[in-house]
Length: 340
Image 1 (cartoon, helix red, strand yellow):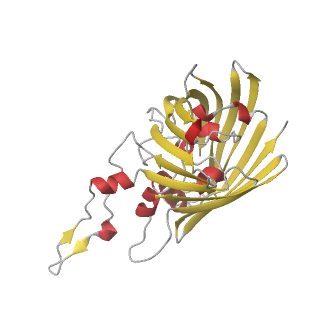
Image 2: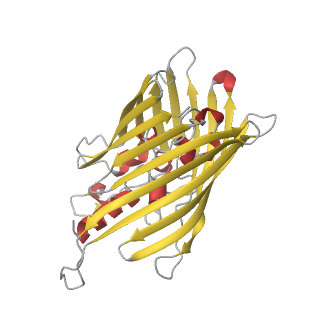
Image 3: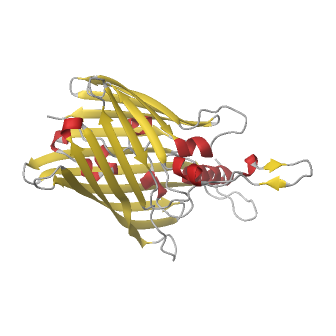
């Protein structure tokens, strides 16, 4: 794989996926990638699940709860090109007072690339990879329906001959109204800094504010999810030059981005069918990805995602598929094991 392909893949991950923050403004972008098939199927960045799944604690520490006790989750994603990444998470109930200790890892490998110098002469091949180790904890605020949690992350990155280290913190808050099976949550992710930069300049981390709400419908086995991503920055839309209009005199008018355009680009919607059963279906739609990767005058189904999970006693298998465009899509695989 040559350097041009590497640049293309990096640009796509930084700007076009559901899972990245608004691109080009920070380093360690892999921290914003979706963590599991379940999350991917629901459109990405779902923060309101509060159940057995320890992977959810990687994205929102407020979701860490006793039901995760001795649950181990392992997830793998066949991303774009030769890029592969995965996550692992485990939770342990220490006691009812201290509640749950959560541990996790995020890892990404960018594959192998052919190296060239400034004159185009072939040099040695190179690769790149990044990893983040996290420890998290959450607890109920006494005499309330609020849960608060935090993750502390140590980050390591190696890209070609350059390396960097950093630390980050996630802080989440969740409100649960059991009578309506209603979950409302907010999380501030990747609050931190580089300790060792790649060269001399300290770069920002992909800080993000996310808000979400979900509910299981009464007497209907469907749980709906609504998420607002990238709320730390309102204006995340951009004018696509391919959608400019040219009049008969050759004058070009750029695509106009209004308040509604920006509002929709923050939204993600998803549903889980049979959420409490041994088999469930998941569907999602990410409005920002759909708009940014929409091909003019051609149906590409960008922004759509779907998946399912099946439980066999102490084992749950999950698979999801996300569509980016006619040229790119990804598959997500996951297994959750009850070690009790």
